[in-house]
Length: 308
Image (cartoon, rainbow, N blue to C red):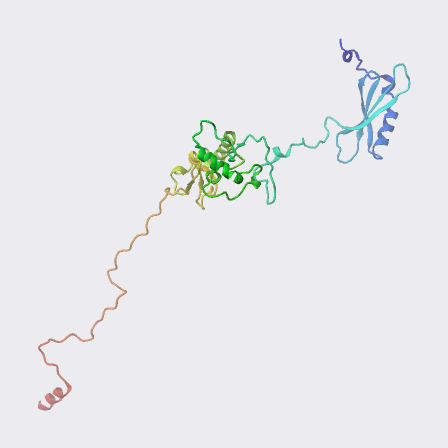
């Protein structure tokens, strides 16, 4: 049987009666007037007792002053052990501290904020920087190896800010940069899956918008394809009227702004007018005379009147 089980859990009588000693110690450690009523006794072991007093300090609701007293074996004098302020069962406590890496949420970053990335981040893996020596069975000729060694000055170790921004044209490092391989770290398979799950949840086939869409984004003319392996399942929406404009969307996503959902008909062409009101038609005031008749002038008319 262990020594812990042989100890009596009944408080020592002399230590339990030392309430005034415990209160005096609590009042000496606390501010004046914040030590309340005696709230109980707890046996900590053989001849070791803790007295609890209510705390009236603002902001410490449910906390208690804990004063531990003890006495030596066969001694009748009780001595002070320690005084501390402890939370009670219903104490008001601050929320559990959470590291910043777990508190950070999308959208929390603002202008000027820096987000350090863990060196062991599972979303990333080492990329190709140009310093890796080709494998013995690699399809790289000795001439290309010599060119790579000649361009070694363009590929330096260290963080991205130390890498040369403009490698020599036609060099190995220039080709690696064009292919997106000249980065210290790239997305790992885990990072790709995490990003794909996040994008699928926000703009995927199971969203309410996609369920009510007339067609999927894979057939939409506003879809901008992505490169790499993610391009097999995602693209970027370029429709300014779509709720996903500028977002990475799944090819199975869709919305009412699909390019072929509702093609606007051409405006109808009006029929030609029966009466053309845009052209002026001349109308003579007198009817045209026959070509065989002789026109009557003023002299002939006078002569005819005189003859009659």
